[in-house]
Image (cartoon, rainbow, N blue to C red; front, side, top):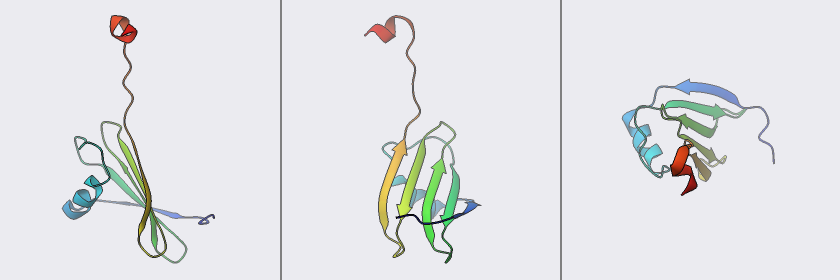
Length: 87
């Protein structure tokens, strides 16, 4: 089911929002994230995207009843070079 077009709004995260967001992260990344909310046609928040300076990204999907339906965290990739890559 498609949500249709969503309106993107960049916000400054409050300490309370950062604390709530931390529940969805595997490890606490350094720095303050860039936080973007996506709203549906009726003005309801449907998605939150947080991007941290180290490359960690967190996406939280919210249904029309304001409940979290899913979340996804992407960690930055680490490339190994030389003898470390061989194990």
